[in-house]
Length: 176
Image 1: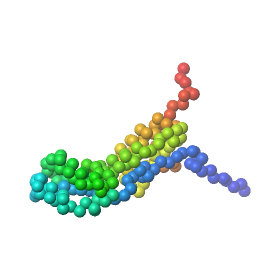
Image 2 (image 1 turned 90 degrees about the vertical axis):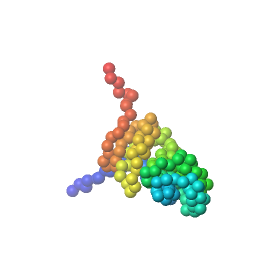
Image 3 (image 1 turned 180 degrees about the vertical axis):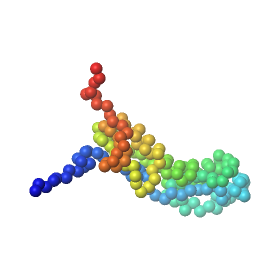
Image 4 (image 1 turned 90 degrees about the horizontal axis):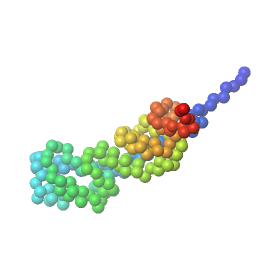
């Protein structure tokens, strides 16, 4: 009776899996909402607003990634966002205007700026599709933009089940 040898075709394929979760922001994420600083959640009174900011415990934002937003429909003057940023800047790690998802998106894109796509020259790359955290679409677009000039191919999914995204044309093949 002959024994069959199983071959792991995925392992032999030379595919490199790239997990975008590796670029997910590390550290504390906090949201600074102007809502609580508004009179009747509608109006920003400059004198009261400045006094409230001076009395805010900014240490709660120490080394945090902070999104500045206003969760109610109110007219907020531009200088108010600038004033909040000026208080946060000495303590926060990163400051972004927008909600938590915009903050996460901005931080992932910032983290992807340090990615060296040239290391993947002529490689077959699978960008992992499923994971423990939700990765924004902009990260997938950005990694594709960075990889495409260098890689042999880009796929999406898992090594055992991929969706082809890009394949570098073979220069040896000519059409006559």
